Length: 282
Image 1: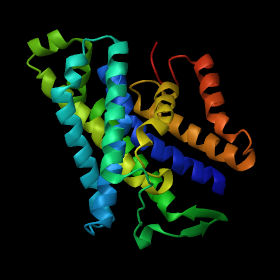
Image 2: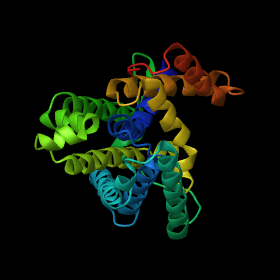
Image 3: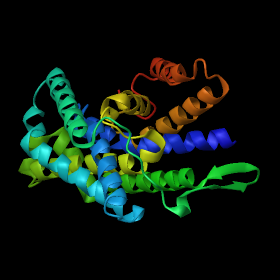
Image 4: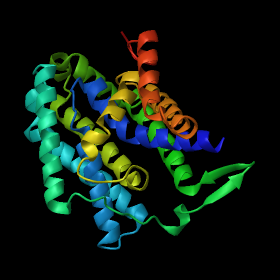
């Protein structure tokens, strides 16, 4: 049960980072392979804020999310929106180029080494409940992931903004005719997706590590979560991330010789059974 709980916590961290990609890819139909760049930015902001300036962890995390959201909004306004009507190959090539530029900038600014972060005392250690060892940091990730999932579900599925977003993606010309500011909706959505990546990157430094190779090293994990869960589905991304996290941690614990390949096996089997993902549409 301890292994299962650690897997759930790992999955929640994947969800926090990957759900922003599900928003931009599934709802905006934009293939943003530079999504991990915003997670890396959030991680560096959190590390610098806590280590260099002594900002409390609970304040540094939202600052990291805001910094990533601001960067996402700027890039959407200046670069990404020019590719909304381009082919998916153009979007892939351009965003991969952004990844390499960001990696070079991070290496120049912070060096190639891993960045350390010290968690506050209330997130260190563990407690034992019903015979299950629960790390406080991992419990924090689980609670945070559930809160983000609930908030996103309400924002996109219930609110007026969510309805405007779906209308702007499906029929932008009609949406403009109805008085919806499509450009404003898109930049807000992109900022939300980037901010979520920054949030996940900030809280994930302790578990995932942080160095300039971060955007490429974990890109495949983010894509697997979106593909298995179903593009644009918040619930699907949550379930897929938890499933992948549990399988990954359990595989590395019980069968370390092949543990790294288990998540790819899960992805292949799921996409054979449901090519559109768990909660995706055909």
